[in-house]
Image 1 (cartoon, rainbow, N blue to C red):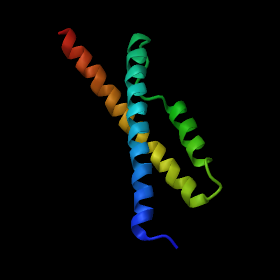
Image 2 (image 1 turned 60 degrees about the horizontal axis):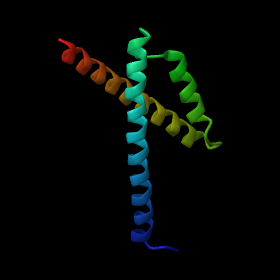
Image 3 (image 1 turned 180 degrees about the vertical axis):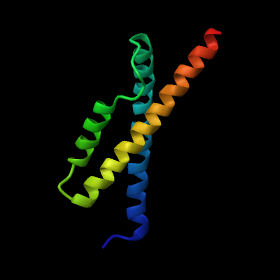
Length: 96
């Protein structure tokens, strides 16, 4: 059996990857905000969010982990919406 510290080091490596992926996701969210602004679309897209939640939930056969993945999707999309709103608000302030 591996030692606790060894396993935690592996978790730390994964966490660093999560951070990198989260920042990439938020960069794409910024791009999406600008596209939505240009096309007069609302920030929240209910059908898209439902599809993403389902994709996350179906990412595993484990029921508990599927539910956890769905909650992660909800969190990520909430953060993306809030970031998009902030980007658009800053854009409006700069135009004034």
